[in-house]
Image 1 (cartoon, rainbow, N blue to C red):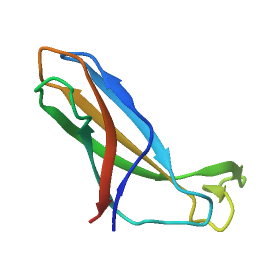
Image 2 (spheres, rainbow, N blue to C red):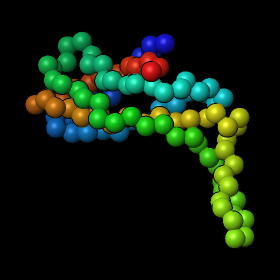
Image 3 (cartoon, rainbow, N blue to C red):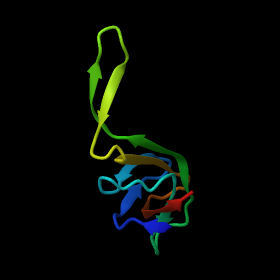
Image 4 (cartoon, rainbow, N blue to C red):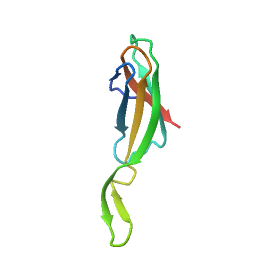
Amino acid sequence: MAWRMGNVFFVAPGATITITFFWPPGVDHGPQWVMAHPLPGEPDVWLVTERVGKKLICESGVITQNGETHFVCAGTGSDYEYRVWITNDGASGCRFQLEGGGV
């Protein structure tokens, strides 16, 4: 399912920014591919997705003597955070929104 985030971001020419986003607790959208969607009227620049990551948000760890660390994860255990790195390969700054969808 495709989506577009309402927030507007800005990336300077030649810069890379990192954006972290998530859905409400208990909602796992699975693997996501994310791109920068330049806003109408912005300069003609390439906005490139460098990397996309996903992690399970864990609250605390419990260490057992002479054993492994065990983590207690938030809520239902399906609370995830996503991160994307966007690079502006152009000569001008650009405003954009994130858009994406499940892979």
